[in-house]
Image 1: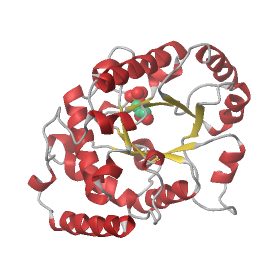
Image 2: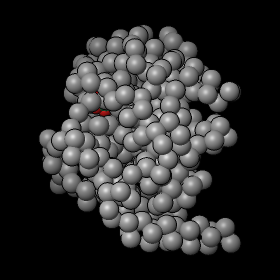
Image 3: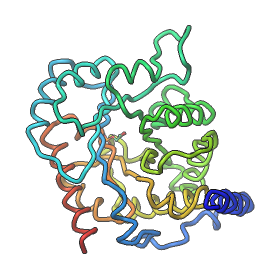
Length: 303
Ligand code: 13P
């Protein structure tokens, strides 16, 4: 009965969504600073801070990062390190904290075969990996990964029980042209379009909002800008699935996050953690971001 209700709810929402095409309709229904959240829902989402090392580190620096990083205690927060493929076995060998997850920055969505230079999910699993980044703007823009491929990757990662970090974000020009919400909605909905029923637990899907103009630029979105975009994304997830499902999906912010701005951003109710580039290469800075996020989320939940 519950399942039937969910299917009907989803169909109605999807139909309404498809009828709404004007930019006005794409504005968030709630103000920046407010959200679908209640403290109750909020408490259901475990904060997550993920490192995206991109094309950085060597085996020696990766090993010393692991030993420094694991000296710090992390409570009430999930942590993930997404490293270059070749460093994943190095990290797996040095990992002694079972709750610390390893992630890859890419994979190819086929079982096996003639795909020179690629890695499949079995290989990643074999190397101790539980999570994958999908749709990062650098893969979209530098390597031409399009919506269809990304949707296939997301569906395959979910089916194989990997934790996907699905990235979306607008360019500076798109923001200046007032197209941010349209871009986010399109990237999100096309990405989700190949997911099959039964849907996974919502804790097993993570979305990362990464405005392209904030990546590696030192320009962080303000906490209000990030909250506005992230709460818009949560509303679209509610349209696509249901309010309760959307309220259990974690949405991260990424783009020049560092140990100085993390707590202001983490204080926003819809931001469930971060995807961190540059600042994640340093075990102390990354640990500080994690600790501040955990402390901030604990405070919001308790108050
Ligand atoms: P920076 O934190 O270096 O801006 O990178 C963000 C990012 O792209 C994470 O995926």
